[in-house]
Image (cartoon, rainbow, N blue to C red; front, side, top):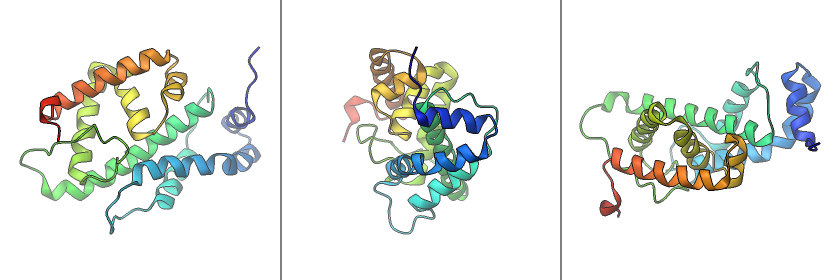
Length: 192
């Protein structure tokens, strides 16, 4: 029988309605949530409308309202957290570029993956749109990109969340990146 971590036990208790479990869980996951948010916010230009701590708090408020989730393990929790943070940032990016619609969408350089938040909002919106299109074609590959690129999860963590082998994650990652590069008009021959 597999040993279930204390964090996973707290997640499951919280999902079952135990508010005390949420209080015990919060300090256990807060630093990791800040790391994920920091991954999103790394390289942000001064004057952005949201800071790392604010992103964590906004995501946390959405997380505590999540119901009917069967938390599989801590990586599953952080994957959902990363997805929520992505949505928050994409909503903000879309709002900030709403008045600037039109013209050609800018290139997004997927070679520089750690700096998710460093590009202009239009680039993030273009990537998000392409990722949504990929999700319609191949949901697992889109999920791999979301977990690795937006969530900062490692290959083993991504494999655990998706319940596939690390080799499958690497293969999906490579194919999804190639597809996204082609979709965004910045194929390998156009790398900067």
